[in-house]
Length: 272
Image (cartoon, rainbow, N blue to C red; front, side, top):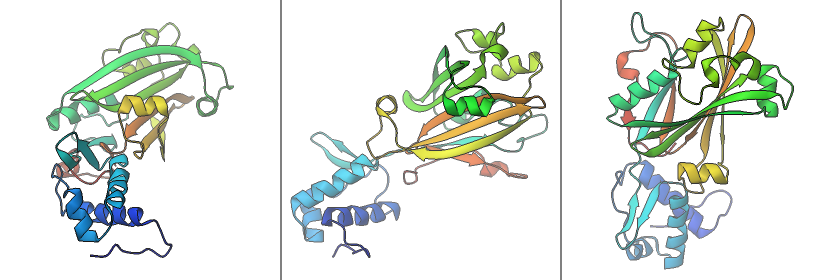
């Protein structure tokens, strides 16, 4: 078999990586299966061993393959946990994702047979320029950040940071260094700042060194970053920035009546 050539010439190892990626995505090898050994790939493609190793390195860095010392190279069995970012209420009397994200994460993990864990911390910091703009503040003004580091089965899953004006949070349980029973939403409702609408900004970017270390991702795996700005009739209430590793999460948005079968599920598809 020859390695397919693209319109623009690329190094042979990159073309080999592209064909291996195609075979993985086509389902030729299922998640968790062992990749053919290097000698088999050499003979199959008619390339040198170093070309094979470089191509495999590319897919390891993308999070598609994993090398196990003394055992070989395997497809990374990385089920995607679907997170319902926003959608209609699933049933009468149920709240949507805007009203109770903490409960949504817990329900999703339970339905997937996963164990949800969370480390929490509260910080008072100077607002980043982008957060300050979204909250209608001057850059450098004080904000209260409530951070949740979520894990599923002890695997890093997401980092969520809720940013509040210091004046809004002062004198409320939002200043406590622990989660609020019922979620921050209960505090906001109690002080007359219940969130009634939201705008989401979604981007993908590469992680920084600290993010790479915490998520334990390969150098080719990006983060999905969801920035939600919530409002009430008086203006912006908070900015919630949530970062996910793209190889283990898929974000769901629902519009209109959504059948129950279209809700949260776990799949073993190709990395996002």
